[in-house]
Image 1 (cartoon, rainbow, N blue to C red):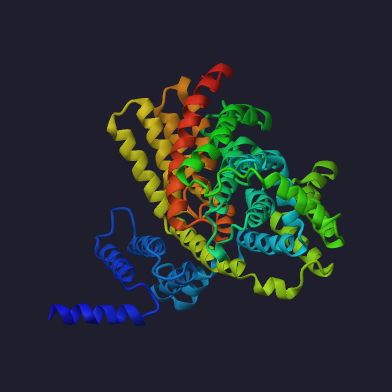
Image 2: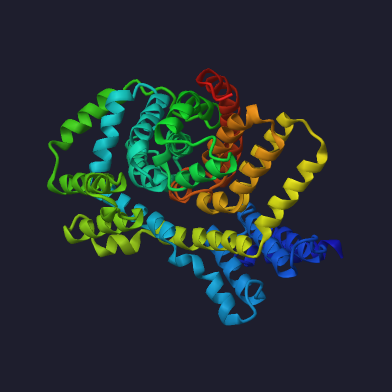
Length: 501
């Protein structure tokens, strides 16, 4: 009897288009969550959505099927279960609601634009230039990418545009110069390491400047409100407070990632000569390469909001508008063509899976799950009788690691940060409120390290295939804790020197 069961199971494993064991585990998780009594303070439909969200994450982690299929599963279940609406029409509208998000289209268009770097050869040229300058060791190239992020951060208010649209194509070109390509199974040579450095530089630089990512001005507003206007973070104040701990993180991050995911090629003694030879062979810049440079320069100026600084807020353009303008410019100049756009599978795959995760996160917020979580956390902390240092640590950690539930830093900050800051202001002694709020400020960017859907930059880099999901989550968790410790220790001392406590 047992042999027949095993034989049947093996037969189904061989014929179904999904991984059977992970699928069974995922189904058990869903059923268990649905049968669990709804926690006090939540409506039944809100708890059902929590079950769908957590099950989707489990299915993605266990790789039941490709991530896009699992995202489509979430859309189908939300539509059929009608947990967000009383009608099928309303449910499918909710399930598809995130696909009109400018953020998602910014990600898609950034991926499409990066194709131009490969097609024109400009990406390879830039990669070879980096190798010629810093190519003696792979870690040196990593530092080159981190420096590039740091230089761009004060002037690029979209971290997605910076990390995914500007730096990532350069990183891919460098990896390609070493024949490190996921399509060939050679991503481990240098590509995995460089992709992780490319990504983890992004949250660090986002924490260092008010203008480095879109939700930072919202953080400034919440800090001012929670502190009763006693702590107002101007551009200069923010940059000064985050300067030293941010630089320490940038200095150590490539070394830590080298330990966590070491590149197969650690030393590249012939790389500099090779790069110089290839640059000589390529000759001077071609016409289409010059167009790519011009388009990138235009996009960087517009992403940095330079016209608005000169002529006023009327000339402010949304980052997604700038991205579409850049893509259109590349198409009408013949730098890339419509077939290039249609054939960029990673862009359209990202549109589906990231859109579904954003939808789930937004619906969790609308149904009150996030507010319920925040209120319960606040009440539990207030009733615990803990010391202020423990309270501050728990608030920071709970806020940061709850980002596993979000696919947008703006949504997370909007939903939870003011509540956490207010609780801290009420329970922490006055002399220590400023360092607590500065840690929360840093944490609002550091939390981007955690998942492959944490912010707009992550699906672009993850979608390029250099890093597995297991590597991404493992490195993300370690780097998140590591950077929080740096900001707590180095930042705490630095803020003491600056007179904030």
